[in-house]
Amino acid sequence: MTEIIRLDGVERSYGQPAVLACAGVSLTIDQGELVAVVGPSGSGKSTLLNLIGTLDRPTAGSATIAGMDVQQMPDAELSALRSYRIGFVFQQFHLAEGVSALDIVADGMLYAGVPRAERRRRAGLALERVGLGHRTGHKPNQLSGGERQRVAIARAVVGDPVLLLADEPTGNLDSESGAAVVELLRELNSSGTTVVVITHDPELAAAFPRRIAVRDGRVVSDSRATEGAAGASEEEAA
Image (tube, rainbow, N blue to C red; front, side, top):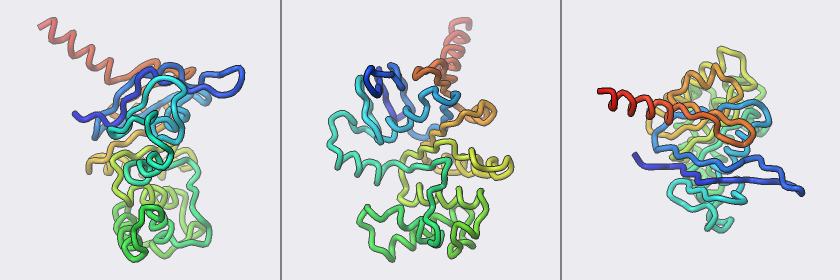
């Protein structure tokens, strides 16, 4: 499998004296994986998402995202990497009030140099992809919480990113809407998008094929490593 995320001894510290929010994390995520990163508030999981999403740089170690060495890239190249290769979904929907769903999603390509007519065409396709083809003209105050999160997801995937990062995407939703968003993320993953979801909810994380638990800025468990060890033990026993 092709690695899309590789972290080697990554640290991120803040302030003086330095406080480690990410304390020597090493992990790889392959293209096409569906991963939950789970941990309590303050565990460092959102810092980890910022590092993976190139919104922040490590203070030590190395991060390679979509084949690019983050440490060696100037800010302009990092911005381009985010624009073309990475989609973001957050707990707060961050939708502009008074703007139609179609234009909100189209604005997701505003800095990619795509002409307006083409942006709107692709936005319509993205909204259809998330089941909102019939709500393109609706504004955020005319949509339910689940629909608003679907608009946010459409905006994140309209440029066909190879990596989708979702930070507590169900945190502001009721259980039914949250389940629908998770199912949508599964569908996007089935179509080839690598999806990494940050959550504090162990029940939500348990529904994902791979689960990485974080505490105090460190990875404390990784179900892929556990399953790999179990598989090796079975082979040795045979």
